[in-house]
Length: 232
Image (tube, rainbow, N blue to C red; front, side, top):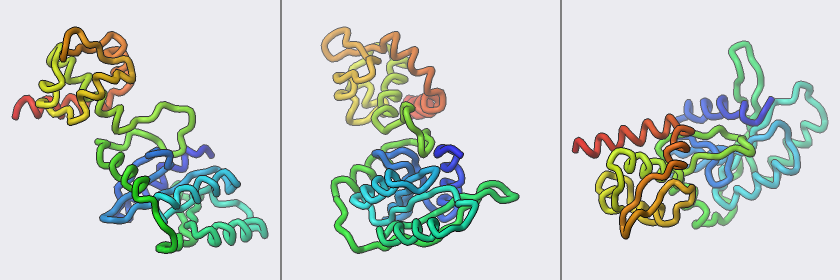
């Protein structure tokens, strides 16, 4: 079982319990929010030192951190020891197992909360990233794949704006609803999508037009947002 195969049942489990779920946020495999509650879940195909290091590092962001792994087929003394270590680290434990109805989630125990100092800056950074995303376009546990971030979403929105309007100023694009960071994203041109053709005026590059085809779902949502702004 791959790490990415663990994400759909974990996401479904969290959503069933009333959480909004996002994958691959600020190096966290899975984040889930409900009211003021922020849960982080780290995914691995087995319990190992890498998983424990990652999970304990996430405790600086939230004290509600779980690890999620496939349930071992054979109960053993080692499995009992793993559960003991996870509990001593004050982490929560979820396992995924195959059932007649598909993959199901078993919660063994919750993390111990309220015992550590959370980094306000790291916590806020995760919350901001979640708030600035329009959807869940990533798969938790992905490795070596280009991820969708709030920054990239914003760049796609700007690129779609330039496709609709043609060469435009940051001010014109902002009026269309591309956000306060429009000028900085255009000027930095991180992805090579934008070209300044005269002072304060940008156009979409050929690379930008070609790269947009790699993000059909995000592009569709961006176009809908821009069309609504034009009708307003």
